[in-house]
Amino acid sequence: MTKCIADQEIVVQVGSVVTVSGGGGGPESWQIVPDCEADATQGRISASTALAQAILGHSIGDRVLVRGPEEQRWWATIEGCNTA
Image 1 (cartoon, rainbow, N blue to C red):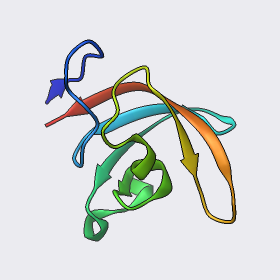
Image 2: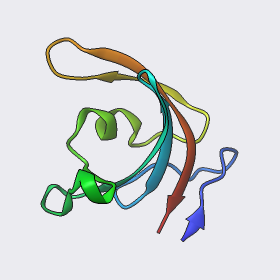
Image 3: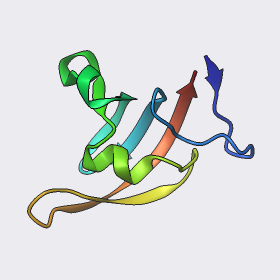
């Protein structure tokens, strides 16, 4: 795996393992995967989730608005990223 570095053009993509903070909790790490591979108990979230949709295409240090169900909104900051 290659470490994402904020000053490079590397961005969060499907397959990336991303550490995010925000939403009222501490930092959490998730791997973004296709829908058929998602398993939150194993740390894998679907690329179609609100969080994944908000961070895909962004880099370390970016702060993004996550738009969840039922008008839920929160800010998330990308703290780290590893990508294949």
